[in-house]
Image 1 (cartoon, rainbow, N blue to C red):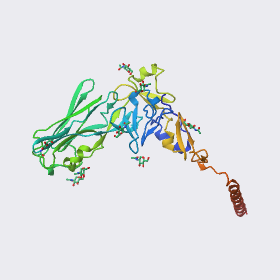
Image 2 (cartoon, protein in one colour):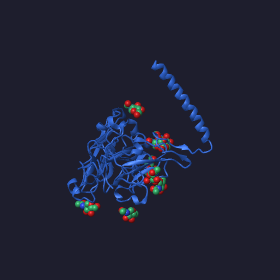
Image 3 (cartoon, rainbow, N blue to C red):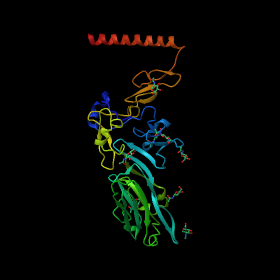
Image 4 (cartoon, rainbow, N blue to C red):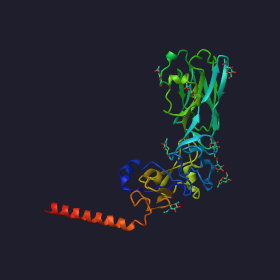
Length: 354
Ligand SMILES: *[C@@H]1O[C@H](CO)[C@@H](O)[C@H](O)[C@H]1NC(C)=O
Ligand SMILES: *[C@@H]1O[C@H](CO)[C@@H](O)[C@H](O)[C@H]1NC(C)=O
Ligand SMILES: *[C@@H]1O[C@H](CO)[C@@H](O)[C@H](O)[C@H]1NC(C)=O
Ligand SMILES: *[C@@H]1O[C@H](CO)[C@@H](O)[C@H](O)[C@H]1NC(C)=O
Ligand SMILES: *[C@@H]1O[C@H](CO)[C@@H](O)[C@H](O)[C@H]1NC(C)=O
Ligand SMILES: *[C@@H]1O[C@H](CO)[C@@H](O)[C@H](O)[C@H]1NC(C)=O
Ligand SMILES: *[C@@H]1O[C@H](CO)[C@@H](O)[C@H](O)[C@H]1NC(C)=O
Ligand SMILES: *[C@@H]1O[C@H](CO)[C@@H](O)[C@H](O)[C@H]1NC(C)=O
């Protein structure tokens, strides 16, 4: 186990290499699945077979009853959209809401989750509240209890501006550093009674910075409560700093040509390929096989389905149906082809040689 980086020798990558060499990628441990549906699952995240749960913390549950299959964080119902080896992952989560009708409170959902090992990124997310009679709070525990939030009041739909999130109908604020717990709560001053015609609900959600653009119509859309938004979580390996981890040789994960970096948020460390080296999920990135591609540590192989032969490589012989009876005929046509080519070659040589 561990991160390994290789020098990329492929000519196609030679040009881009100098530019992208500092980006990191990892490969799933041999024998583990490297993806779940469309989501690539790189080491140290793992999914698939049971011998892949060396650390439950990085286990991704792949639910194949969806098409394509969906990835979920450990045992939770939090869907994972993307895992980056630069120390973050993108999840998808529901909005919280607090809705009213003419007789008062109608229905609500105070969304929240508790992450024991991951952190909600304080640099890549914004806590967002929309509504016109809205106090929205996010509370939790960072080691200390924290509470932050947004206030938004408005009285006339004409005052609202699309894509503007500056406190009239929509409000955004930063989240504190080191947040693992996230729990929403709401309050309203007039129970939305003054704005019921165009805004019966208050909504609150953490969202990846830039991934939500306020639309005035969201305030009256009763289906907004069903929306889900991307949130960026930070992840690291273990709880040791680079200096501590390097001394713990047996468990130190930054192997071959990779270096240790201390994260900006939280404890633990990350591995990064050294300059000029890059490890890639070759099956996914290069798509080198016309047959089935298997990722192996630091390499890959190709194979052909049953009844086919060849090396399975796009640049090799590929996969061709096994032929037996037609062999002599094939040689015959090939022979004709070759001699035709040869004559043409000689002809051309003759023309240009003169
Ligand atoms: C997911 O993969 C399927 C086929 O494997 C493809 O048709 C689809 O476009 C992909 N979806 C996304 C969002 O990449
Ligand atoms: C793998 O998961 C099983 C079931 O959750 C657990 O009993 C076992 O200890 C895990 N193995 C490792 C190496 O963590
Ligand atoms: C997969 O998702 C379906 C539908 O949400 C659910 O019923 C099922 O329990 C899930 N299976 C696993 C293994 O999580
Ligand atoms: C308001 O919502 C409550 C709770 O859902 C419901 O009992 C009540 O009938 C609703 N009132 C009106 C006027 O729709
Ligand atoms: C805001 O955008 C929505 C569509 O997203 C559009 O229907 C609406 O007319 C726009 N309103 C204003 C005031 O620009
Ligand atoms: C809300 O969703 C329901 C069912 O998905 C749909 O029939 C309805 O038209 C939607 N309403 C709005 C305002 O988009
Ligand atoms: C670090 O992690 C190890 C193993 O998960 C645990 O036993 C230890 O208590 C942790 N140390 C601190 C300071 O959190
Ligand atoms: C390719 O690797 C897979 C997985 O390790 C293995 O099962 C298969 O036999 C290998 N095929 C070839 C042609 O080496």
